[in-house]
Image (cartoon, rainbow, N blue to C red; front, side, top):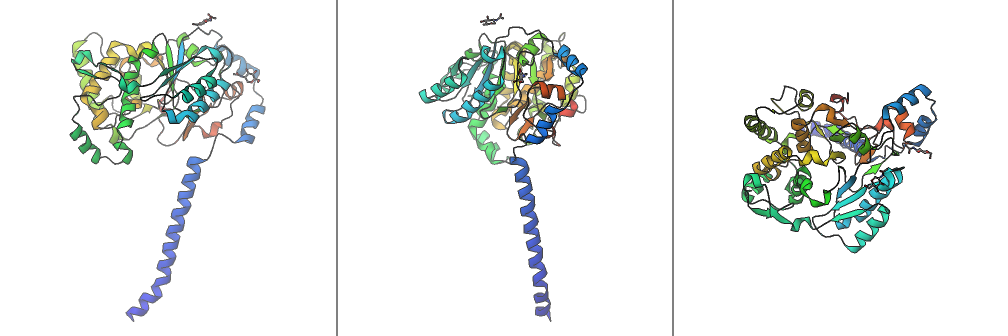
Amino acid sequence: MVANRKESRQPPIMARRLIRIGSFLAIAIIVLLYWFWPWYLDETYIASLHAQDIDPWAVENWERLRGTVTPNVSAALIILAMDKDVDDVVDTISVFKNRFLGRVSNHYSWILFNDGHFSSDFRSKTSSAAYPNRVIYADNIAEATGILHPTHQKSIEHLYWGVPSWIDQELMKAKWETMPRERTNRLSYRHMCRFHSGLVYKHPALKGFDYVMRLDSGMLIHCDVDDMLDPFAEMARDNVAYGFGISMTDGMWSIPTLWSTTKAFIAHYNFVNPNDPIPRDKRLLDFISDDGGETFNTCHFWDNFEVVRVEFMQRPEVQEYFEWLDVAGGFFYERWGDAPVHTLCVVLFARHSEVRRLDHIAYTHHPETQCPQDIVTFQKGNCTCNPKKSFNKWWTCGHRWTNN
Ligand SMILES: *[C@@H]1O[C@H](CO)[C@@H](O)[C@H](O)[C@H]1NC(C)=O
Ligand SMILES: *[C@@H]1O[C@H](CO)[C@@H](O)[C@H](O)[C@H]1NC(C)=O
């Protein structure tokens, strides 16, 4: 009797297993397709947007708002890359070069950073891709030494790419063991985050540049950028210190003590500078906090594309904040990213009017894309991305931001 019942139950169990495996596979395939599908290549829909008639008044208004004043800004595009990334770097330089028209096309320089060495092959391929624009090769940064953080009286260290003497490396490795993701175990990733967070602005290659646009190798741009759409000129004209595209939340596991460390800095700073308290702008604070600064909601500017006024990041108070974070050790004990750190620099020291979302710069940093939602901007820029596929996933913070 018992055996019988067991036998009669076997097929449904098998069937249920198959259904379970089948639905798991189906979901996995859907997720994979969604993630890797080149959403920016929806040609018919994109062509129909370009064919759409727009009210001439809207175009006139757009032109009036964008203005034609284009200050002569000294700017550079920066990428941190390794020698083996040569094909991705050449792709990114070429795609940007093809899209940069007018004055933008030959005026701006590239700065390529590398902790190691750039080979002559890398140099010749990238410099011909960028020609006639200048390329500055800032490699071997791991070898640079100097005095780090004079205000903290810290000793001579590797300037850009070493584990500082005050970090307890045994403790650091023990802490990594408790973290949820495998890639957290990578020291080079932490060096990169710390470099982008604040050290890059100490590098002599940035001397003489008013603005820098940060990119990563492999990034693509989908709209033309002429003098009217030039983000550097726009930011200089409107006195903007920080420009971004996509914003999103972060994994709290990577920054558990970033906000408490920042609050300690705010208390210290406001004690020392009672007449110049931070944060300076409540609207910026409300972007990163739902409770007036009690907690951090992890909203941050996704800074693998960002445009920064160098002078802002080099201000003594901004560097002091970076040094405070660096001495606290969270770049190594945790995995503080440069994106939340830059966001907090901006929240503490900028005003809302000095921060701008650059909606019209359409780019893809895999797997996310930003594409203009405004039809005039889309047509004017000859965009080839799909506005419907612009980043708007549930973890976006874009709805929390308006430029005005
Ligand atoms: C802009 O600056 C560059 C170099 O700084 C210079 O060569 C160029 O002539 C300037 N253009 C204008 C229109 O002032
Ligand atoms: C879009 O393409 C047209 C035709 O090739 C060109 O004249 C125009 O300058 C381009 N738009 C921008 C913003 O560069």
